[in-house]
Image 1: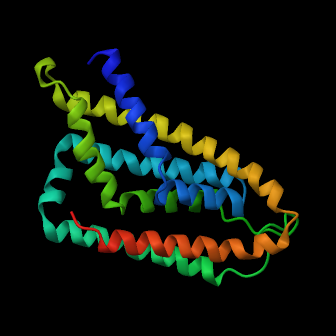
Image 2 (image 1 turned 180 degrees about the vertical axis):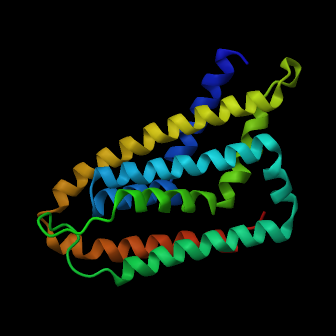
Length: 207
């Protein structure tokens, strides 16, 4: 695999990572409502979940899931249900989440686990790897599975870097919003609406 192919893949991966979706939305939400460390912990969880999708793509499991309507539907609705559960938690949240002296931040390990679960239950990630990785693999060079593994690792690294930058940026936004209670009190509702929208979108999507 040559360097030009890697850079082309990296560019495509960065564009797709930046595009609005459940993962980066969740990172931004945790960073703003808690702190940048919460966002980074979530990012680590999401990227750990990517290891599962990368392994599935390399081993051909993603293709099996895609071809099986039943398995794909189960994973799809499980992911949608989880997002709707997160939306429900957001709607139930009370008070001002930005009171630094009284904030009750979730344990980072819980956010890490939540990130893993959220990523694994998103079937679109598996389909993404199934559709994208083969386009940058050169069969004539052999070791196709190894080439896919390298591309998957490149994707994971750039995702972790970008998600971490999202967390730092959102942490700065948090500092601005802290002094504006009227905005802070509505953010849980906004977060809940966004999770609901994405959850429904995943549920009604087709293969």
